[in-house]
Amino acid sequence: MCMFVGAFATIFGIFYLKTRQNLAMIEKGMNPRLRIERPTPYRNMRWAMLLIGAGLGLFLAFLLDRHILPQQYNDYNGRLYRDDGANVPIYFALIAVGGGLGLVFSYFLEKKWWDKMYEKEQASFPQTRVEDASEVL
Image 1 (cartoon, rainbow, N blue to C red):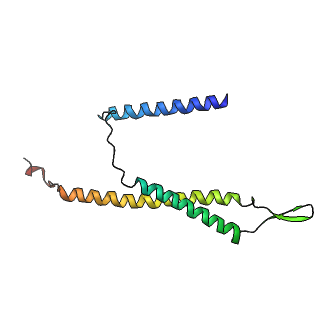
Image 2 (cartoon, rainbow, N blue to C red):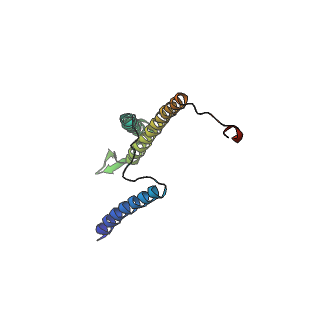
Image 3 (spheres, rainbow, N blue to C red):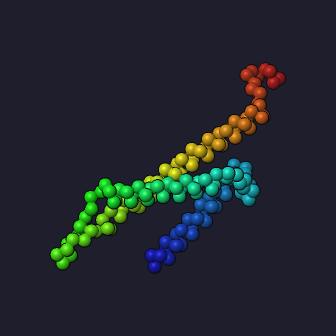
């Protein structure tokens, strides 16, 4: 029952937000059916940075687990066994942190590119500034 309610709420929420977005576009005088797709030149780089960051996070977690963090040992029938599952949360945390850092790095590279393209566009289409309204009349 709980899964049914959760699935229904998710689907309802998606359609509700889509309708609200369309209404907001209509209020601003835009046609919701004609969405302008911005070019995404760095889509592959974004994925690459995400995966590289996650990989570096996983490698750092492995190094921390094996060489820096203290190991825990369990006594079983008079023998000591190393508990390999003691430091598992560090793996998940560093994968998420590394992936997030990769996405932040990708964002700054992409923003730099967009700013450069905007400056090129402004340079190719110079806009004249009118300082005084009497110049127009």
